[in-house]
Length: 331
Image (tube, rainbow, N blue to C red; front, side, top):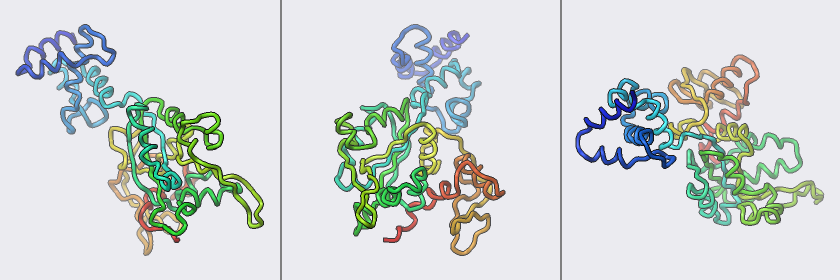
């Protein structure tokens, strides 16, 4: 049935250009035959034809199934071809931070080239320059709270150590990379956490260019080490999801590349002095307004907090991304 519909459609296509494109577009496997031709035709319609069309590709996009069959093309084939063309077959994501020490020595271009699509097969899903607040720094490194190196680690990611007298230069570049096996690929390029270990065991990786700084207490005793390792990369899928949601709002990632569920907010949420509010008060900041697109887990957390229930994440981990770049941290 599919092949007969395709042949009928092919005979009705006006002009020679579309027919030529149908012949030239091949199945990604490189194979021939009628199936490859079907997928090739499907790919022609998978550009996608209209942002208002329904049923093909992600929810709310693509031709309707009836419209696809009317053109003699199998809807599943269009979906398959469209997803392959848009690179959505695998949407594993990972967070990368280019840290202040990398910016200090002008390694940004080198680092970006190492993560390029040519080398990794990964694509940018989001990027921004961030003046790191203490709130997001503490949430990002929450697992290290209470450790001897924790205060120095916070000052490090906030840029206070590398730019003590230049607050205007304190920033990181936050990136989301998306694609098959993204976490492993990125960590392979970044190398071991400890730059000394990276130089010995993985020369040529990014962190092999970093350094290890001893941390001393008030009496001058060494109490630990700080890894000035140039970049952060998510360690696993759970960390990647937590970190992407910590640093990025859903609307900062293009619709076709969002990897985690979202919802549309139906009411206001305000933040003031560590408290969550539903009514505006003097000095409060609106985090979310009706109609805003929000990570579903964040919305669950906000509702649980309002009801006094434990949430999957803290209030600060939700609020931090909405408060980024609003004003500078105290010098």
